[in-house]
Amino acid sequence: MARWGLAAVAVGIVAGATLPGAITGIAAAWDANRTSLPWLFERAFGYLAYMAMTGSVVYGLLLSTGFLDALAHRPISFALHQDLAAIGAGLAGVHGFLLGLDHSVPFTIAAILVPGQSPHAPVAVALGQLSLYLSLAVIASFYLRRRLGQRAWRTLHYVTFLAFTFATAHGILAGSDTGSPWAAWLYTGAAAVVTFLLVIRLGLSIGTRFASPAPMAPPERGTSRAGPQPRPRPSSAPAAEETA
Image (cartoon, rainbow, N blue to C red; front, top):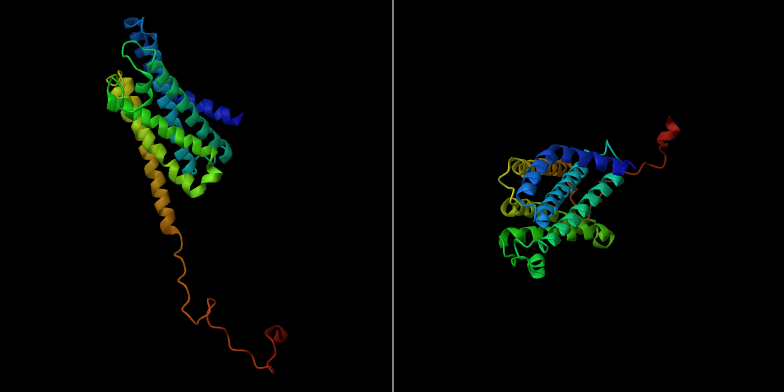
């Protein structure tokens, strides 16, 4: 219950900050394009997918810095991070599926699935497709974590930042609402928060690395690691315990 309660709070904060402007923009587009429902829903799912992805990245950075440990148990935080990533990928998949139903721009199955085949803004659309595929790889790594090992899993997890960068560029370059103030604030705010937390995360990592003690040099050949041994006591001398 705490897990879903925290998720509801996170979604509420994001929705409260962006939903009013988004509703206004979508309502205006509805009046101008009543016959293009797939296009409207396609945009809505695209923005929802981007917000879920941003939430997952932000949550992961807060988790890695330890800032969330005072608010929730680490397993709950990790599960929420994983769930947000899966929700974002699912919404992005619906966003891509709706492209095939939008008759304003004819998208074939190949154009939806293969990067570079889009009839509209092929480079920008390809960035969105690559972002989805990279996100799916990261999501799959959650379930293969034990087989991959901790080091390989962490390395693969950094792909999330590349996927987020591609998704942001895709939204800015291919989105029809990029010129709207609310969309500009959404992309700018998301990029600023992720960049800020990433800088903090890197700073903590570098600080921890420099603060850790240097490894001990191996002993020279012929010497003992524990150092020189004390000279043996003469047999006539009493032990320290006995003289006390």
